[in-house]
Amino acid sequence: MNRPLADFTKDELEAWCEQHGAPGYRAVQIRRWLYGKRVNDFDAMHDVPAKLRECLKSEIALFASEILAHQQASDGTEKLLLQLHDGHRVECVLMREPKRRTVCISTQVGCGMGCVFCASGLLGLTRNLTTGEILEQILRIDRLLGRDERLTNVVVMGIGEPLANLQNLLPALETLNEKGGMGLGARRITISTVGLPEKIRELAQFGKQFNLAVSLHAPNDKLRDRLVPVNDKIGLDAILQATDDFFETTGRRVTFEYVVLGGVNDGMEQARELATLLRGRNAHVNLIPMNPVEETGFDAPLQARLRQFVETLEQTGTPTTIRKRKGADIDAACGQLRLKKEQTVELQP
Ligand code: SAH
Image (cartoon, rainbow, N blue to C red; front, side, top):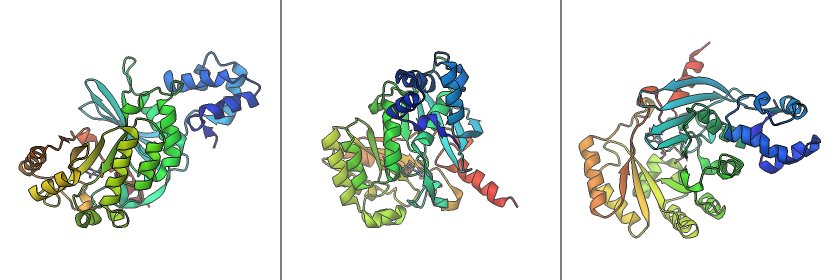
């Protein structure tokens, strides 16, 4: 298979143009068509000479994936299931709010972290996505937007652990941010991690103003070891030290995500413990009521308990928000579509 266009960095595409006897600025034009003008065909790149377009067609793939399913929810959320060149699948989601168009992207096929409530980890990790495959999700979603709509935010919160694939993610984020790429401000990009301390520091050193969200889910190691199995080799102390360093280096306030599992981590005592853990830190808690995944055996919290949890946190001065659920009628949350498809496939003879 030809290497997809989104896999080339600006410098690589310039070099490719020069190898084909074209000036480097042709790369700028080609990238403008891909990232800015939503073309679906090399022939639509009108200002690129026909001869160079022929070379593009024979050596480079405009996209490396195929759209296998496209679903639209009643709240404006849309979801794509993409089939990669080797048959594996990933999903990405478009979420619409009055002033925002946010895309949620995946970074791996499957996930190796094994969080016990998460659908993505049930089948384990298959492989990392390439830089092109990561970017392509954004390009595909961008092409679903209306003429007057623009992508405003990207959240790296789909399938996979982004910081376990930082080597392919960083060039994708660079293109996303760069003027000749998607031109999206770093502050509009959020990366969610299970909490890999050294990788958090590496991300900070990259020197961009990205938002970091850390999936805490428990206020102590005993409970976190149970919910997030990789925690037993890491521990909350090391994670919080790394997020303190991230804040110091970037000046960006860190978000702590907390999946609220009914009867498991939603008690007032746990809210108080969480507040104590985060006291003195410039932090923000984002509560995610569990999206039920049948296979995991966990449930969403009762509304009254959730409210109590929030009130307890707020009384301690911890800024807290509750994540709104989007696209519920199309299984837009947390790896559910891919899981369903994989199960369907497995059932076939
Ligand atoms: N590996 C990254 C990205 C995971 S997806 C991370 O761990 O942060 C983004 C968030 O959704 C994470 O906080 C993840 O724990 C959470 N999540 C996973 N399954 C969920 C479910 N069934 N209900 C609610 N949130 C879930």
